[in-house]
Image 1 (cartoon, one colour):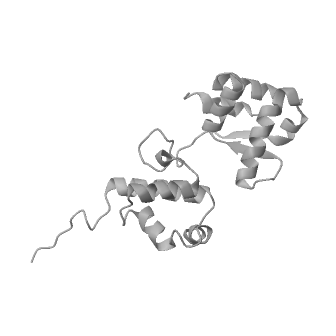
Image 2 (cartoon, rainbow, N blue to C red; image 1 turned 30 degrees about the horizontal axis):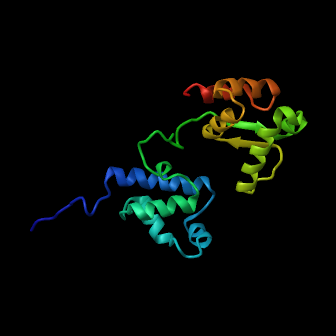
Image 3 (cartoon, one colour; image 1 turned 180 degrees about the horizontal axis):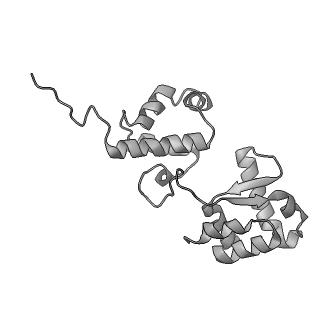
Length: 173
């Protein structure tokens, strides 16, 4: 009698890594597996998403694209191994002090204030004190301010909107 432990029965390393990315994106959005099912009105079943995340079930390119749209992220954020930073790694925090931002002149901080308000609206996050942003957000803001990310970081630190720790976030640019 032969027992086969073929690849069809065990998830590949890539499937596990893809599942870990899917789980990370879901948890970053504060969703449980059942929360995904509820938010999608049954489009995404908890058991199916869970099997994708464990690497037990193959996900087609079409389904991966649909999941990316559901989560509101680019497809490449779901793919393992690319340039996307691992959410498990220690990435420096970019935290905007919203109270300090509200005290700055509009001609100086207007674009940043509008950008922060948009992020708050998208997240439904209105605590009013601080707002975490991603490195990609800082890149976009740098384009708006016609500066490099490092230059903008220094300016925001000088305004008191970012902590000096933010310098570490732009070292890899």
